[in-house]
Image: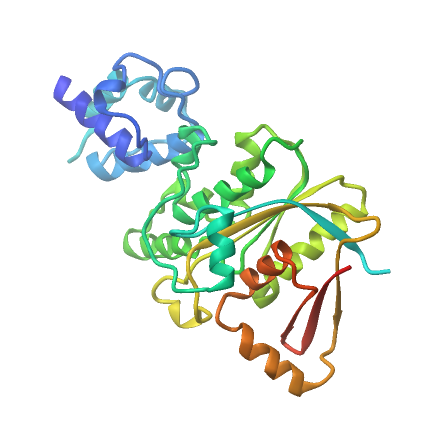
Length: 86
Length: 247
């Protein structure tokens, strides 16, 4: 799982153009949105698209479940591991 | 009486032309502007700066510099073509796989840079985004003069453009390069800069005038007048004559 977590961190940096960050700067457990990394709603959509492209996941736009999956890198990794089709 | 204004502060950026001294030299002896350098834009938090590409960085860089510590004021952002590269990229994405980048989509509107500028500074002053064909720079100033007439103590004008990308480059006016400039203007009670807009008088004069000035983009001809000491600047476009005067 750590490998997938690192892969997701790299994906976040690349998709969201976080020019100054490296995967090591992103805390696996910290919130991605609002506090923590400080991403916003446009980032959520962009990240959703990137996850769809990379892993073939399907996401529903505004469900409570999606919010849970996007809570942290750890939560995303669990979600990707369970639902990926590529 | 003509509406008049005075210039309080200005800034401009193009590759290799990053301060006012460099611009004054260039205005005196224009030459080809080339280079891949990127405005630093250290004034804007990195989390917002990541949303803009080179053109947006240039526009925002000069906006910050021209505002430089002054109180917030209304802003007029102006560009003939705006961030067309982003629009072309979006259309390519749409044609290729049907999904477009939400970030690119949100930043592709004409007022995107103005919006980012206001959000980054928590500034709720009004702003507008002008696109008025070949007369975009002139119309931006007219918009700003209108805001001054309505009582704004100052108005920030920001102009930016770059050559059109493939496959639209055939529509690009000649002599284009990436550039942005901004000026902060205020109302003038006595001496100041004013303009009149009328039908051209003598076609012969017009041609003589045009020959001397086609070498640099029209918006920069206007900036050269605003920041220099010429008594007047005349431009004829689409059958109209813009006459700017210092009085």
